[in-house]
Image 1 (tube, one colour):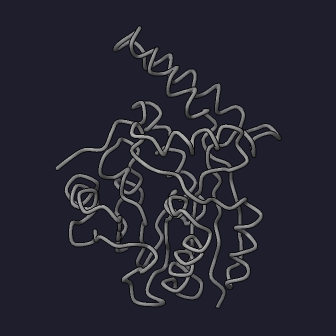
Image 2 (cartoon, one colour):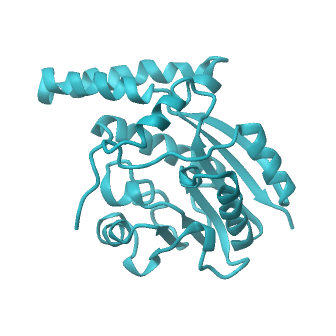
Amino acid sequence: MPKPSWYLDPEVARQKRRVHQDLIRRWAGIRPEGVMLKTDLFEEAWGEDGIYGDLFEGNAAVLLGTDIAEATVARAGAVGGLHPAHAFVCDLRALPVRPLSLDLILSMSSLDHFESKAEFHSSLMQLCGALQPGGSLVITLDNPANPLYRLLRLVSRTAISPFRLGFTPALRDLKQELEDIDFEVMDHAWLIHNPRLLSTAVFGAIRLILGRHAGPVIRLGLRLFALQGRLWTRRYSACFYAVHARKRN
């Protein structure tokens, strides 16, 4: 089974995991009930940034996960904290889930891999149709307001990247689209303030120079970058933005 290219320092992966888990627990609750779906299993399969594993420990809810890559789904079911029977392969533009059957959808930087606005809208409508009234959608997307976003998008189309970035709407446009398809937007957030290309190069150099002693230095760098999240400029420094929306009854 082939493994995608390495793309995050372990310390960065753990930070990403922690930030996303804290956000989801704040918006969805510590022990939500019902059936929930995560729309991308890349992290669970291949990295230390997997969100699902201990997200809702001791919870009786049914955890489902899907990805378009068969190898990713197979590995996530084996090592990613997801029951193998609950992981399945699909294209989000044709979600094989019964309408009105889900209570919570976690769409972590999934829809921003589609090439066009039409494909993005189609997949968003699929998620909307699968949620029952009152159900919640937590969605994160690449932040197009970040000055480095366009450069990262170009790099993602080369052989060195394990993923390809596609269409991403601005935050205000996503909020409006969600309102238009009968969602109530509850909250939004700006996530991860490490400049991805720059920090990857810098942290890689630190690992090369300091070896096993690099961890504390990288963690200090992450804490310093995270301070940007307290500033009014956070909408520009964030790598991702997140939205919590609830389907109207």
